[in-house]
Image: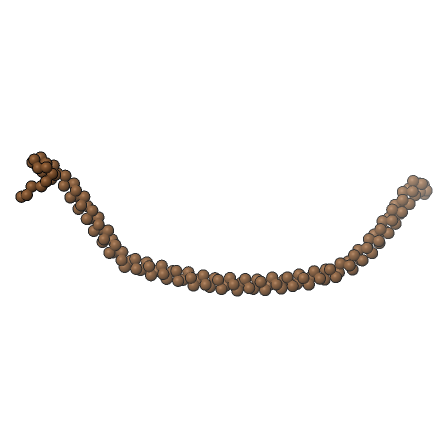
Length: 141
């Protein structure tokens, strides 16, 4: 009962050999990765200095854009204030002349109504004059 079967010894030996090969491959890959990292370190250092310089340039550009935006915003605010004052002046001028314009329009309506009234009366006089025997000429009274 204490005996180990032969097939178990073969399976254990195969497992031991596979693990030994796997461990050797892992040691080789670890040394390969260490060498590769040593090669990459200067490249990574140069890239980090480039990134730092780009970061500084971006910060300077951001500051410049901020200052430009503030300057343009201030100028736009001055322009808007000027346009608003011009609009207020035009509105006040229009308010000053509005009664005269309204009076003129009312006078024009009255005049056009008066002229329309005269036109409606004129054909009757012409018909009366034609009926009296005159040929389109008015009689002298």
